[in-house]
Length: 275
Image 1 (tube, one colour):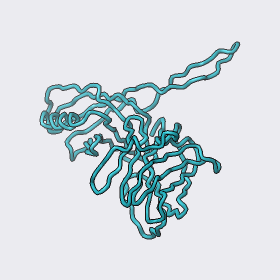
Image 2: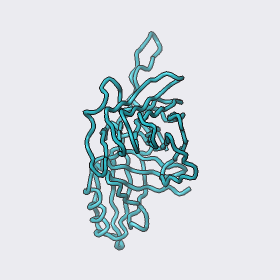
Image 3: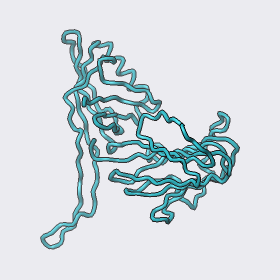
Image 4: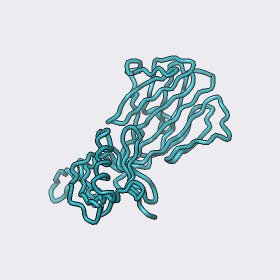
């Protein structure tokens, strides 16, 4: 399978490295991983006490087929929003990592094309998104969900579904609630026992609530008829609220606090060493 790479900014705008954009990428290095370990010594043996995944660097060669004009267009893109840029890498599966652009060289035109060396600081593991939906008090037979990442659908009248984190670290969750709610809560269960909870002290007949646990983009918001408000102060501070899913199999339970049609979509961000 041909590998494909593209950048994506926080607005969802993508820049593809292909003939259509006129910018090709080659000579990639640094796509692997590196670990740093701390050990304790016991006589003639060592016991690992800590593993740290350090900041690493990805480097490549960019060829701007449109010369300086293509170079300028690329600069305009990365300067739109340099924070939380994603580098997507697609082979058999698609994964992405958060990056900063460390450097970009500029050289003379050769045959109308311009070649530049680029380096990225890789700030995260390779991440894969998947989503699961919990629909309460509704029959959703025949629904189609146009998600670009793997989607697991389950109609759960009791508001509970099973899910697994197949990555190597705990996975941040993005919780999205739609419809009516009255002090809603989301619970993560392991072997029938609650291990983590989100509880909100809010009520609405029709709203969209989003709670993102991504460490670099944590927020809580509620949208009612287009009016978006920060609901951080409305959380139950005795609970975890920004939820993470440990490695392994769990159940997730959604309690909207109402008996009318409502749903909850959960996006899981699994972390892997490679892709």
